[in-house]
Length: 144
Length: 151
Image 1 (cartoon, rainbow over the protein chains, first blue to last red):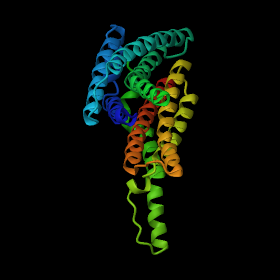
Image 2 (cartoon, rainbow over the protein chains, first blue to last red; image 1 turned 180 degrees about the horizontal axis):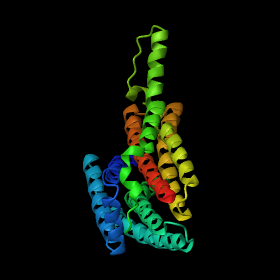
Image 3 (tube, chains in turn blue, red; image 1 turned 30 degrees about the vertical axis):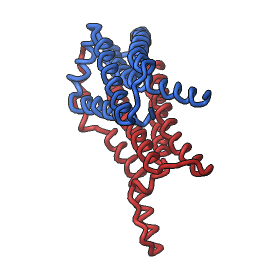
Image 4 (cartoon, chains in turn cyan, orange; image 1 turned 180 degrees about the vertical axis):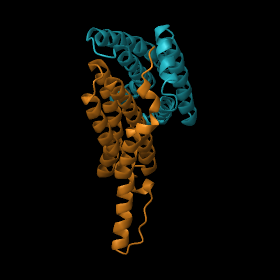
């Protein structure tokens, strides 16, 4: 597994996110914020990232004629959940901080913070597991 | 959710679009044009394509520069420190990984270890695309946030 393998897919996800922001500057952010308020955003993101990661891993394994490993599959399934849940706590702290500052236009600022956090969390949840797998492969190669 | 009215007119003040064009021109187009100009000046038949020009993973270096500039913009923004830290870490990580492709290819060529230019080009291209897309979305988010703060 090389990090360049998931990089292209991640770039396309990122470009789609950017395009949605540009072409739907009001409705897309509203959708994200509403889902976050209804506590649906994190489960949706977990489902999306786990499916995408497993699809990516199986595709790379197929291309390289490799056998998918159980440890790597477990990593791809669990790391996005841990990362997204952890980053959700960070987002809560961010929102509490933004509101406590009493800045003008606080609601709009909070919405933008949610949007930025959603994007960075999405990237982390897709790329994190592959980074861990790559590091583990490197460690195993060094030890053997 | 209250809608910030200024956000509806994104295309009219798309600074991030100008920023993208600037990077594409200075990072990719200018080196390619300079190579052509050098070949013309020296009456050489060399007419390298972008792929040949960046076949040793040099795109990784361009990506690192790009990541640094966006991290700098992020640091200057009024986002909360948590968001700034999160964005900066991911941009830095992807920039470093892209630069690592160039370093690995340099080390391989220097030590005579097996080196595949196709792989270096593919890896650096994919990681450069990742850094570029991350940077682009970050700039769009920054642009939106500036508008929200100015309201």
